[in-house]
Length: 262
Length: 265
Image (cartoon, rainbow over all chains, first blue to last red; front, top):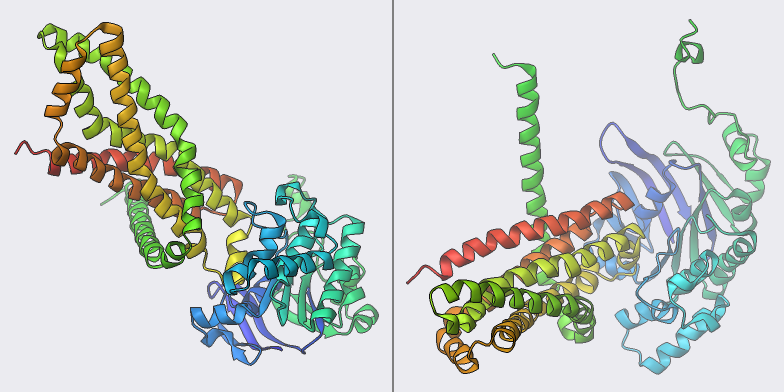
């Protein structure tokens, strides 16, 4: 479904964000891209969505190279994609119902009665049919994330991108969202890419994991392989160890020197 | 030959100038894109009518009250001055011409920039900060066509209407003070106004001014919001810039338009 071949990305020559990334996401699978903050995960997701173009290499989505697509081509590709943003990004001037109906009204000529039924089905799938009349400001963080999930699957996309879907959720909402990622992917027959640093939640639901560090793909494997990995980088990340290859201390001069003791 | 401080200052001025020219270029491109992508909102008029309510109807209170008070103050001040020359009956002309030619378009545009312009900048800036515009892009919906263009046309349509309401309320305020309160002859107040105010020279020129101000204010407000850094500080700075830049641009454009329109010929 998605193939990334030798992709590098940089804002300028001195600051490479991603270097030599190779990755394959098979159709129907849920794949996680993991890594600490600033490792380039979201940039990689934006490259897949065609928001940014790679400096070198190719991103192929459903057989199309995103860097060769013009604006109309990108929009055509995105109609088959859904994206869940980190904090939902619901349209604050529209109700829950109108948020989910947004894409249906923009991209289809369906009659309002059919849109109503579809919206209710989508909201029911995330357990929020009864909240259709609420405004986004009246929703809790977890509910907003579920509405956004319903909205991102409104047109039954073949690829769903998740940008940090578990961040800032309480344990119950987190569990619900985690299960929905898997359930929706399987029910819709979609492919999902989950960018996250919530290790345990992600490892429970995904089929495969790519681990990024410093803009490079340093490890990949199934959740079991990642848990059993002896790679110090992977171990530190998966088990949340404070010190390891990723240093706890930000580079600084000698402490004694800092305190003028020498 | 040159000291270091002077070179740094000179470089700073150059840098600032280049930045501003670049920003003007982006803003112009943004305006052209907005106009080119206006088809969607003209096909779906409810997008514009919704924005007309927020920008136009909700600005009515401030426009009506300000117009009334400006007219009443002009009634007092105009009467005082005209009485010196024994031409109190020309009070209607003074109030009407001042409002239709200048105060109506300019003051209502300044109020519009503060009330509706700042709201537009803050709304679009916050939509950008909360990734709503990015979400729209990812849904293959162009934010310029869906969010910016309806607001732009709503601003352009509401501005002349608000200026007309401002002028009408101002004339009524002048009438209340001049005729009802002070006792200027009602017949001459209206008759002199009717004969002195020219439709083409005064009213149409006033409408042209308010349309130009409407385009300028809405363009500035929308661009500032769209270009705002996606942070709380960025949005607040953009909102302030909208009000300051719009006000200066309105006054500058008013001078230029007045120079072209009323050359005494």
